[in-house]
Length: 75
Image 1 (cartoon, rainbow, N blue to C red):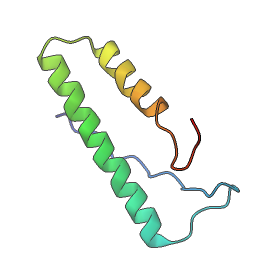
Image 2: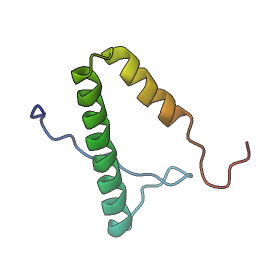
Image 3: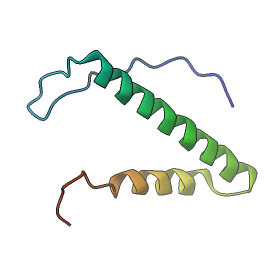
């Protein structure tokens, strides 16, 4: 894997736009995003090593995220 400069985590916001103030919630969200980033990087690397098209892999990962529905959302 290539080394990247660390990114500043986002300011997590509530539905009304106010920032989330609970440090434990912020920590969990930041850890979740880091785990997802690592999994996506691994999937991209695996796909490239197996000869898959980078743009197609990225499109599949975007489609996966775009297809997520929040808990309690009606289909």
